[in-house]
Image (tube, rainbow, N blue to C red; front, side, top):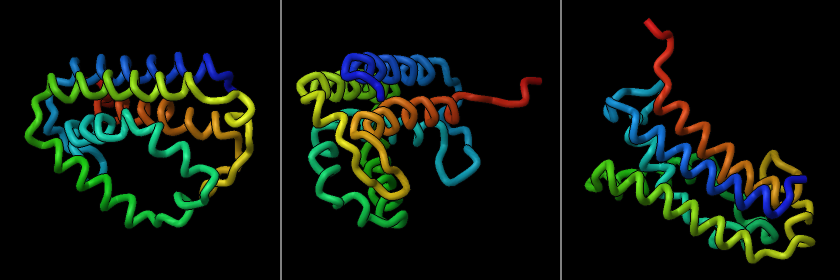
Length: 153
């Protein structure tokens, strides 16, 4: 299992890497392979970046497993739309600040509770690993998707 300190450091790292990708992505209107643009992907990252303190208590409750993909997609779309008026600089700042907020929250959590195995949809793993999925892997995946331009020509 990822240690609490690795998780805290990883969350901060992921936020900074996503911000660096956002700074270097020239075309935020680039259409991705689904309904989002590059800018939408960064807005999504910014919208969820600071949410660890809201999500973590729900891991034990089973509430999140009851949310369907349609509901999650609706929430994501609303959050992205709510950030459409923000500048690139504001989105980048929100990504960093949000990840720092989530990392600060995770730093306060009990190691034994982080090691507790819970079931969340298709996941059955320690809470710390679920947090890593959401605030590290998820962040980096969206940042990569938003910034990658393959094939290089």
